[in-house]
Image (cartoon, rainbow, N blue to C red; front, top):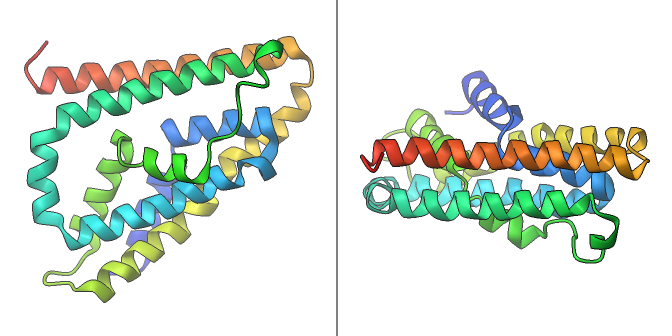
Length: 202
């Protein structure tokens, strides 16, 4: 179950751009790495919990997800658009009091409406969980995924921290936040469009 294939898959899925990593890069720029740590831990531990629960309840989750897929996508994309707006506001000097790093609980909860997280978790459970696996296998898989995920996503917050030093001017930070906000919004709209096409709405 554990080994190079799991390490490769989870690392690749964790380090590639997606809603979590875009938010972490923006958080690193706007708040620094240290203040982004609860966000980081929330993602990794939330991911591990999601892997554990999906592994234990895979058949039920697959049926449930199919029934609720469109609603989850709408919720996830709506939340991502709201987060895009928050990143956009982070570039406005007068908005600094309104914007703060994502909390541990907020980051962990976001995994349940993050479309990329669902794809990653379900594939992980299907590919790496032995048949008739019990609680101990599911716990081991969840722990491995959380531990592999954490350093991969930390790179994004660290990249944001490095960029922060180069974006000291308010105008440069506004540009960066605008680009990050646009990328997150486009990600949300693409995921929404793709899901609406699958559902036969478009």
